[in-house]
Image (tube, rainbow, N blue to C red; front, side, top):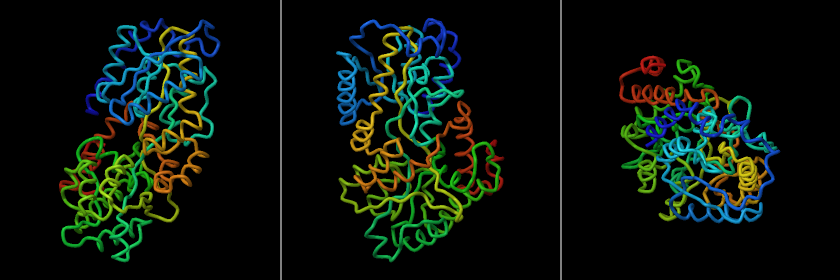
Length: 411
């Protein structure tokens, strides 16, 4: 599904001239900034990908309240399935029917902004002061801010409190502790640690915590730091602390193993918490361990941002920017985080959120230092992600050594 989305993005990029023409020309400057028409705006159209409850209703309620607060009587919202969103945007750009407000997954913002289909929020006086660096980096293209993300997610280490306590094991803070703990917790049908290492973008996403935490970088995949991260994954599988099946396990499969008691620890995201609570699993969460004392745990950034497409209607674009600002108010950041199992992207709010929702403390710490996948590579990220998951699979299936894997994968 992700692949289809990226193909669509590439297609959209090739249609940049068409998009600009459709929008009346002028790209981000076409919106007229904050000095647009004073014509009354009675309604705004919104496109997003929350099609299922409770998220669908929660987003609708928030949009309507924000609409009322800025004097817009009607929000005409169209939620579509996530995998079809970019194709929908492509079609709307061609038919000159882009929505007034558009939700985008954070890795997609730069690619869409590059086509000229989005207005820079800076032009409406909207800044991202006080936000975590990751969401700002993901939404910034050529020095301008194109999206504002109210809440974020990432991945961290879940652990079964009762299992670790019984074994006398503390949640790992270092790679050495992770290996030791995973080995000790591997008993009978229970593996010590579970992760997702599939040959797809999800597998690459799960490899980023060890790679980035160890100082590895997507711009230099042949570095010793990246090889050491690959070695960690290999060691966990080779010593039996993690199943060889990790090369086939999606994140949902990893969660299933954890719930079933077949893994004492797992790498996963907060979207799994409802199923863990339903299964009455007594769990805790900590950031991904560091390899060396001077390192900071770094995980990938997830979540979506609100943007303002260039529609050519200055009055509506100005109101759309107001709606985006409202959806990112302090009150709505806290509400969205609590409703969606997310973390507020404003650092001050995240600190408050950590006190109010201690179960999310591990993710609050992780989001503060989370990095955007497109932060350095922009539209080139998908090609690099393919090299990462290919190299990772070569190592875990014994076809390459960690030091050689990324080169063999095309890096």
